[in-house]
Length: 56
Image (cartoon, rainbow, N blue to C red):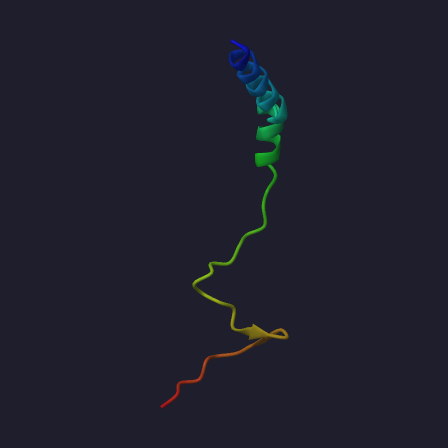
């Protein structure tokens, strides 16, 4: 029967580590910077727009 009490203590410890619902909602309301899509890499270098040249 000792194992059951050890499991109960472990679950109580896990609950203490999680942020409260208020803390979670406050963190999620902070605006995040927009991220660029990975499939379209930037084509700018040092502030100059560069067009990819066609290789023919």
